[in-house]
Length: 294
Image 1 (cartoon, rainbow, N blue to C red):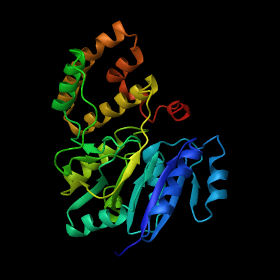
Image 2 (image 1 turned 90 degrees about the horizontal axis):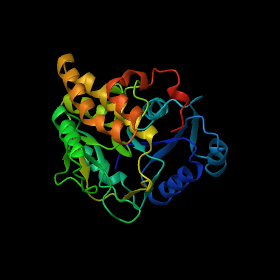
Image 3 (image 1 turned 90 degrees about the vertical axis):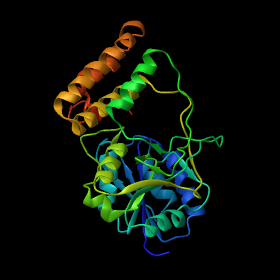
Image 4 (image 1 turned 45 degrees about the vertical axis):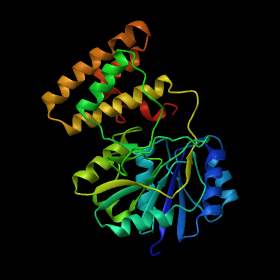
């Protein structure tokens, strides 16, 4: 193997979880690497605790809660590795994934982002990647939700080539990340990974999942709260607006809004539904978004 890997984690009030992830990195990884933690103004003594336990880990204080994508961009600017591994703090490595990832990139110069087939803490498939956002995809999902057709649990894609690799474990050449300008910093959280992979794909690269790495993604059991739903919806609308002509986006937005309207009427999820319509007010350039709890 050649080339050092910069492993970048974003931390926000997850001191113990982040340190658990770092312990697993040191226990498993044998390839040349550096670990960079970007802290988004945590209030749980994360910076102190991480620095005290791991003297070789570089901790960068963002100075505020700048969001997931912006924090990763900050970490990459500091990185000195040939490769970057953007790893969620709520993951645990069960083996060394770097040889598998590096081999996948070296086999084909047109491979963009690679990731693992993630599992949850029970060993079941966890969301690892899939199809990018499109009008057809989200209108279909909206109709299924409207008709109360419950989808199945996460399943791993049947083919290794995917449109996007989930942001929990994105591995790529640093030069590619820089050439595509990294994450869109207008996205505070959610869909920044899919949007970046979409740009990488349109640049002529192919993204894929790799067999061999064993990475556990500690998914939350309580489900999505309203804050998550609002930001997820706003980010989706922003990404769709970037991708499609204005008339197509507005038609999609209206249709999607009408499909979600029963949620506002029957379940009182007004903010969530309105985010589909007035998504601009929920984007990162809204002054109050940076101060909202994640």
